[in-house]
Image (cartoon, rainbow, N blue to C red; front, side, top):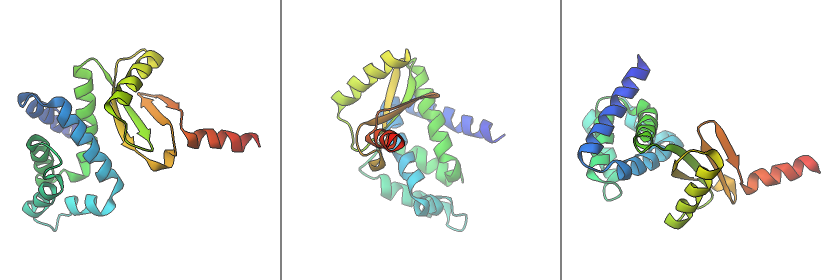
Length: 175
């Protein structure tokens, strides 16, 4: 039942973003929003607090996303929070991002990097991951300082760890 609700919301998100001809940008913004939500317990708890009126929770979303996301993205997140789906938002966004990538015959490549990547770096990385996995990919970058340097890419079940952190661990195991 829960998966059906997640899929229904993701499909609705996709329908709205498609109608606005804004799927790629909305997918990027939602992906980044999900990373913030995932990393911040206080923020996640505020958005899902049943004691806060829905209008207050929606105002928090609008305040946080104002000037940082399109109206479409803000409205979708606000709607999900207003209907009491804040705890499911990460999974809804994950399903939406996958739906968006599949619509373009691509797989989502979650890439963790210590710093944000430029568009040129993302394009070159997408080409390299496409060659390595045999799948066309859409790169979604997660800035993760624990990587230290390099990148960790995951496409489906395939993980390619080219991080400095991983190489340091390998050195520790040898010595």
